[in-house]
Image (cartoon, rainbow, N blue to C red):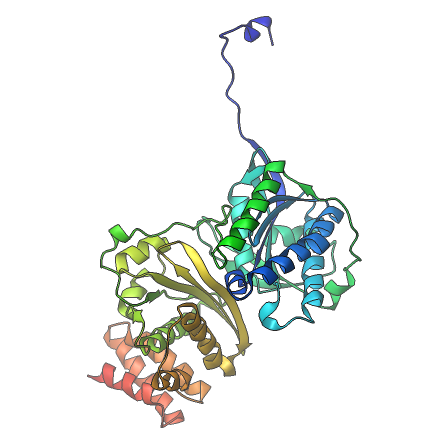
Length: 443
């Protein structure tokens, strides 16, 4: 550099954003708004105790830095992938032990997502797809669980003796390509890795984040039950009431989008579609709920659109989306209910069970929606929702396959549908829905 470059008025090269490769961990409390609504003071005290007695000491032990600490969410970064995973395992195992003596409805339970990514550094803050993917992984994790991306798995599989469950390729919002997701199983192997908690100072970002965290806690106490905005999570993109194609109904309105088939066999698509349609049918039985018909919501199948856009086109406030994974006789359902007018999640959960309990798993999703929207059900509606269409799973499978053919709207598809409906009623002569489906196609 010559002296000329330092003279007054000399051109200054614009400052470029710093980028780096790091390990990002995103964590969030499950059901935080419900906990706050039931007991603000108790929830805040428990949250602060967990952070002071467990999360901060473990972060110091594994050289983690808290980037953001707002409400019920934590964003952290680690220089070591192994340290990040060990931190997550230790925290989840310790929280499970701390919660053992607590009633189920008062437990502080986290979901954790871990990703390796290239990020943009702005002061003490970090941004970029690496952060967004970590947040999406957190949303995919079970309550009390940890989800990691394949790049994390590749780094730790020869260094940590952990059981990792392959969840397959998952498409997540605002990320261009599907991500390969693994669940860290917190079994005996994970428990062996747990070490005693050692008190130590915690590395954090600039002091302004400490101030921001204190302000956030005060705000929570003042307005308990508020859904917290998490600025590192993409997708908080509210729909505009002015742009709604139709005025919102005078009762809660919902669109159930086609659930994604996460099974390794693409031929299981009919199962995901059939389960989606069953949810629509069940919700339609509730008089206090306005439900968009299948013919409208299935036009969005396979399309990449924002929830805001779909809600505006359909004129609804709430959107349910999710995925189904069928492997052998096991079923996993991921579902999340979104308030399109705020862009926030009312709830998100995962349901695992045997195929024999598929109707029970569907009922749990319906019950969550009813509870989240504070719907009042009549005795008749409750009885209808509890009713199982059939006790014969083979007949139910034929029924779902038949519906796929019925919606093909061609002669060959109709012929297949009629044959499959006949097989369903042959296995269960009391299967009313199968008779109704046959009648619709035969007309």
